[in-house]
Structure formats: C-alpha cells, structure tokens
Image (cartoon, rainbow, N blue to C red; front, side):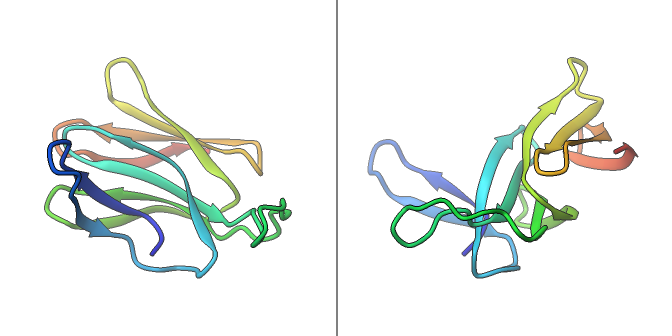
Length: 124
C-alpha cells in the first residue's frame, strides 16, 4: 500500500487505518516516520530487497516525503528522492529537516508548529 498512518490499540491489538498515501509505485518501502501532535511525516524509497532478502541497488529516484494530517489529508512534500530519511525539527520547531541519503542532500523547511504544515523549502 505504500505509506500509511495507522492506530494500534495496545489493549486489543487492533490496527485501524487512519489515512494512506496515494500509491506511487508497486515497489516502494517506508524509510522513516516521525509524528507531531498535528501531523505524521514519512519517507518512502525504491524497495532495495529482493524476494529472498538479497540487496538490490537503488537505481531510481522514486522516493518521496509525505505529510499525513489528522483529518486524513495527505500532502507530498518532495518527490524524486533517492532515500529520504533523518526527519528532524529545530529545537524551537520552526524548521523541519530531512535528508536524501542517496544524493547526500539535506532539505530545510520553515515549519508551522500550530498547523503541522511544512511551509517553504528554504534550502536544499
């Protein structure tokens, strides 16, 4: 299914799908997920494992970073990434960062902590 946000009941073990990102590839996997009170953010990349667990080289930049809002809305932050990961915020939560490990690049966004929205890519 690609990236999704699910709720796990620790009492019953039930899993509830809250929202799912649009399918952009049949071979994508989640690389990292972080959440705030206002949003969950996830990165996906090309699947790098074969059917028997063998390593497969990352050949395509089909990764993306995605924001999932509490109301179920899904927003693509960036596309055409190699391996998006290392999601982090500045101590004052006014900047959001993530890296593309394949390209050796760090993306920096203004971040609105009240809405959970990454506003502007200020540097990449």
